[in-house]
Length: 143
Image (cartoon, rainbow, N blue to C red; front, side, top):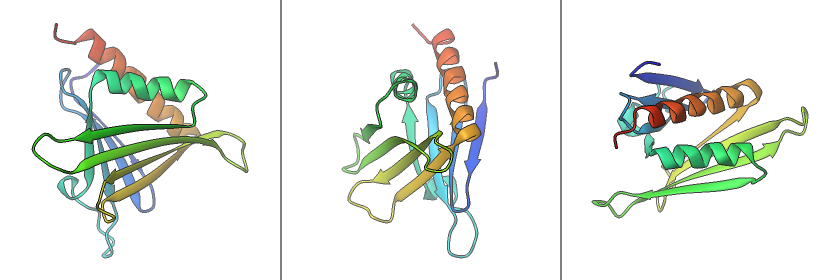
């Protein structure tokens, strides 16, 4: 186990970066997209959410069971904006294997909407990363 984690799931136009700074830090999901000039947004330009341990467990529980859709909604106490993250599982038509689409959006802002689909090995890796982070957060949780 290490203190710092960073793993990226880059696609053609949207990326999700899973990040932690140390054992006690929440898990950060950062969404960025490719801009019109073919450069990538900086973290502060994208959309991010900080997941607490119970939310990590909620994502893993969703991935392990038969539910098809799950939501996590955050509202910053100092802002009127709500962030909504939708997790949708489905079977791909060609392979008949499970895939996961994650949609991050700033509600009431059509520009701040990101969508990324993880299939096969990327979905498995996403789940393994979350399982590792869950174990680590439990082991180093402050009581």
